[in-house]
Length: 554
Image (cartoon, rainbow, N blue to C red; front, side, top):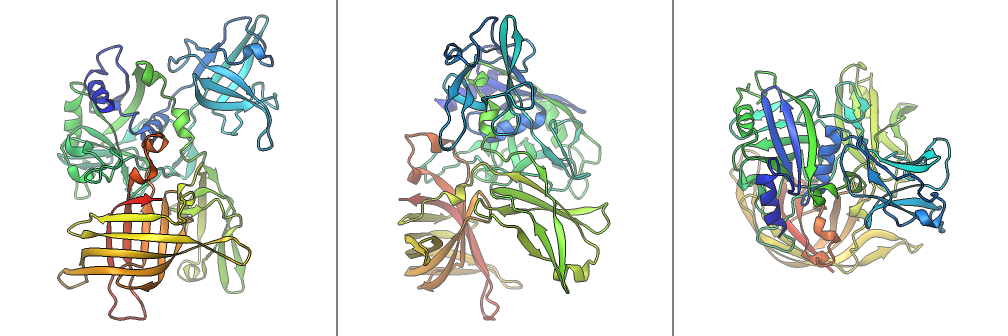
């Protein structure tokens, strides 16, 4: 039913009133076109896109003479209705009082029907309005009239982003006056960044939404890129979305399962403009020889489902405000160290410079929720080659860390290899987590495995070689969730038998089905990567890598 609805929306949304749709009207130097956003299947990408386009405030007010906020008569009544100055016309809101518990103070919760949108403090503190309990200033509640009594709720949509041109943190909109930096002639064009650097990020990264059919072992990703005109998130790897996006003008099934598709170009509303941009003349680096710009993106919507799509609800699962970190360099004799302050549960983007003008980097360092102390990075060798070194760092909090929430005790994993010409399967069963002397988990699991696969091994200067492996065995494996919120890494040791890898990475893609009680965890299919590293002590060792799909069974 969802798929049928989406197809109707795609065709009719821009020109027919009364349909459920969220559309983005894009104004460019080459002409205008309209995108229809797939907010049902890719809510994170759509919310991020709308935020960076610069969504205005949604404003709701009560009628005159409503009961006081501090009285029972004010609660569970949908008094708050959108005003003419609101960015979007929404369904009414209501307020409820949530008493204090041992874990949180009392606060006022704001709902649209039964959907929780956020909360504000119980009392006025420094501001003339009741402040957002998260400290992110996404929601405000204030008394705007005392005679007669009238209240206002303001839903705000801030999205701080890092401008890599000067390493300043700015607030949305980002998608204004933005160059189109790259074109794959006849296939697609790329936008959403300030420079032509494909590694550029806005100071945060978030999950992919590539799954379409949970439990469909033959094709869990669907076929969104089997057609042209698709709007997709550009990224440099699994679950590394930021601000960059692309629009296709030709089918490319190789993109399925690799990139999040979150909309497409509406029929008869500027597809010729998109085609002209994608057919632009480029240089050897795929940079257009003529400057082309996206001037502005305006969001509009219609229908109850689209009006009920609150970007702030999904933003709660996205990285939060970007903070400039106070880094420092310490010297102890001939040893130099970079000290990064503790920010548990965050992503940190690091940039380095030798002249305080040109910075390079932008690579991410994760601090897991359990990292409560400062991080120390040894710079001794770096200083030898670069005696002048300046560092800037920016951290964004991660609201949840799924790699640390996996229940691994006595679990079973089934994996199918799908990379290149590789084929085969790997399954393993974990025991219970080993404990230290104090009874704390060590992250180490014993287990058994079964493997049957043929992998193409590439060695420098030699023709590819097929490596077959078949058998069973046992292992110890240490699980590491500290490398990032959206990936968990097993490192194998004490392996008995023919296992052909040292390391296995689980990619924890976002899955809208995970909140559906009808979908079980074992039905969810995600991606993995495996590798065997070179052994410095063994001159005959070879590097090997492959990837595919996995399911976790209890």
